[in-house]
Length: 134
Image (tube, rainbow, N blue to C red; front, side, top):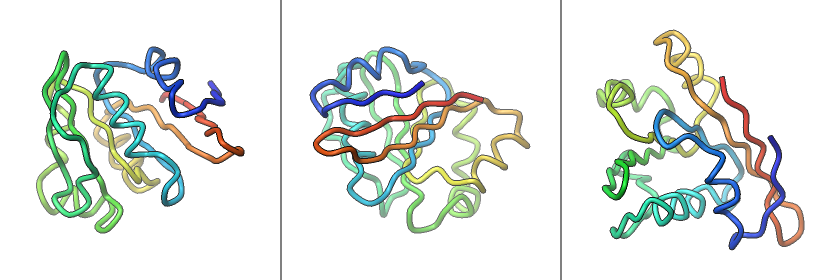
């Protein structure tokens, strides 16, 4: 699926996404990955401050659903493995991974875990969100 949206229209996209499982976010710096996570958290009534877990690698938010928010920019998929965070993907909730790369895709496939990918690109004042689910 392909969506061309302004940032205030993200609910249109969020309503089509699963509310549990794994979502990999991909895009350049400042493409809107964290902004999308914030919108998802707001949609599910998370009242906590949502920010990118660049240094902690993972944060958990509680709202109508449990949201696990990962950022693997600095350490990649190996950082998730080295820190034992890979087991979290078996926990109930929505797991959103910023910078979800091909290496993480391979690992998830080996673990027989389904996931969706969202590629985010710029188009003027809008973003193009390309969603594919495995």
